[in-house]
Length: 161
Ligand code: MG
Image 1 (cartoon, helix red, strand yellow):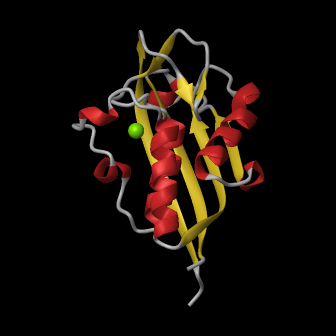
Image 2 (cartoon, helix red, strand yellow):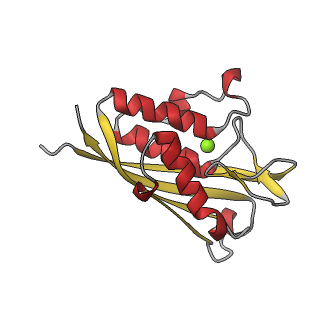
């Protein structure tokens, strides 16, 4: 049996006025931000869920319950670092991560490299192992009409212990 394991993550947050917009740990100037218990970094949440899936750790709702005041307003990069620690404890190393943000606006192209760097730094891996991309959904659905953002992530991990 191969020591490779894949994981997929998906997340959605609502866009609301009066919140900062944090994506991949980067604060992006915008008229609205994502609503959530933590900083609501939808991209980082999808990556965390993908890693949790690969290592059979369940999901981030189980690891970091949104009923726990300890996680109120917390940086999702901190939580990602914790997932990375659990992953290493389980004997897995990240091979690569590919994440995609689904958002009609704003344009996030200029921030993609910084997001990849932040995600890599939180996990203690090389930025070359992380790819971040973005797409609109052509004005369709809840991402298209600007009521929310979604993200998918796929990760490949390898058993090293
Ligand atoms: Mg989330």
